[in-house]
Amino acid sequence: MDSSIHERLKEARGNLGRDEFAEILGVHKNTLGRYERGESEPTSGLLTLLCTKFGISPQWLLFGAGEMKRDPVGENDIPSDVEMIRVPKVKARLSAGTGSLETSGEIEQFYAFRSDWLNRKCSPGKCVVMDVAGDSMDPIIKDKDIVLIDKGQDEVIAGNIYAIGIDDGVLVKYVDKEPGMYVFRSANQAYSSIRVDLNDESLNVRIIGRVLWMGREL
Image 1 (cartoon, rainbow, N blue to C red):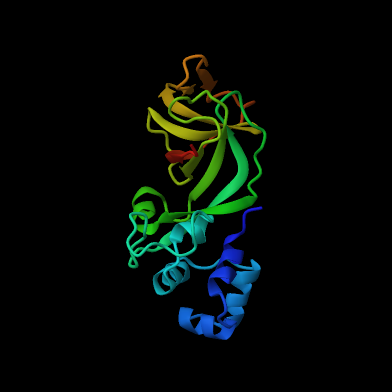
Image 2: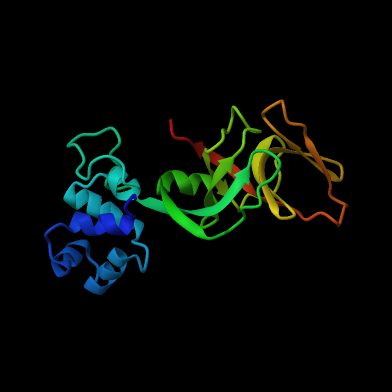
């Protein structure tokens, strides 16, 4: 099983005592203890400082990828003056198909993004990461991709991709507007468009947020 960021934080401490490690990082030892036990989330500033002072790989610390110690010069190093912002990934899945009922808002893990990039793209505190299931948005977004959604951008700009809620289901689609109507389009031509009458009070339709970024494993 993959380790958590809390376990990796403890591993990065190595043979240093908690008091000494906490002093170097500028936090109280009890605060550090809560971080290591998973009782609270370490701040992006602390994680950046840890990587800078101890030569820890940000990719290893944040994602468990690669080796703990980074190379002296690496193209994937994060500059010491750039902080990271951790965005929650929820258990809910976006359906790229006919609709997913997996809509739990419970936080599953966190993904880290550069603060300078995220602050330009997203509404503060409104971002969330979700899995995608299905092929209706293929080849733009594929099955098992992850997407970053800005819940602060819930006003439709035609032709953009949005996370959408219809009753108990959640979808990811292109969204267009016609008088009194939303049109949800797939990238995959095998899927028909979904036309939703906004005056139909029997439907609970909502724009969750705009999809800003996607990532996938090869």
